[in-house]
Image (cartoon, rainbow, N blue to C red; front, side):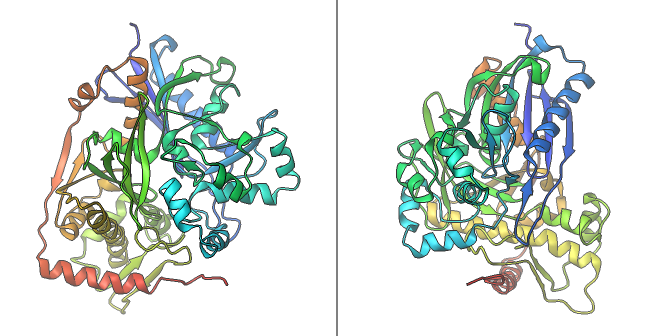
Length: 498
């Protein structure tokens, strides 16, 4: 076999990335490009789906050219994506009918509140494993159908297609030949029954969403179709699609029940593999971790909506720093945050609070608080949010986590990872390759295409960069966390509209 490479497309919330891996799962080249974020109203977040696709296609083509890769050397392409973000487009023209509504967007918070008041909380949890929240895709689809004139009628006639970002990319890359999603992305829509493994009739009726606009649901590791040469310049199999957090779980080698990871990306997402049996929780999400070989693995998930995005906020909006690495240098220049706490609830709070109306706040300010202290408070705020999630996960699963595997761009911060280990009183293990989201998609595409033979072969390639061990006293840990709990309470219900 002349196949030498697997290409992973990682369509994130703020950038499109393409990485090429060799047979040893070493990344031999990568390309990334940021795309435009739209904030048309407070709490609303959108993307231009056409720009998003062109950005992803562009970085993939540039990656191939720069690394002098021949078409017959590519075994397959794998896709991982920001979850819950949805696109609706014209089936005939391929043009989006509205901007993609991003997972962070809170415009459907009032609709979610109505569903809760009407008593649908238990029904939705029992079918989907999810809580009622604007975070998920279903209410976003309904909003677009309700707010674009004439769209619902066109959708019911079969003229409109809908999908999460994996579906949009596969449809575009295949030249409109393939309208599919995988079980992990479907499980995040609030429309998919994770027990019956099908779109749920009752929920589609509740939100008035025609089934005909939704994609076919497949395994996460499977050859769906080939790319269209007229679109991409070549034809190779598209052999995996998986939500970004589930992809990171697989990329970390968390194949067994009880394995856990936390990804420090735009948001922070902690997943624990619970095996072939779903674990029900009132505060965590029960979700599908993987579909492979016709078998399903489940996971518990805790969600932090704003993680590494707070660093981008300090850079772009406040202009306190000029680059992401600068925040570490400033944070390391002071021994602590000087009593300041930054709660980055810019788009509400996820686990365990699930407060759609919370907003970001900074408390504990005195005149002695400097820029460096705020930078440190921002990093610590991310770590505190992760502590909230881990405590909930341990309690609800009944399983202690002795080591937390970490990945994502923000986990390169040594000062934050050490504070995280101190705050959790748990070892934090960082792999050499922190881009495990793309790696997971590459592994799954490689397994589907025969490029790699087994999970055991994959595990042999995993390498650790550094293990952070807790050094903080129990007294200091408890004191700092008590302060955080006071601070986060100040952010609750801030933007509530009734």
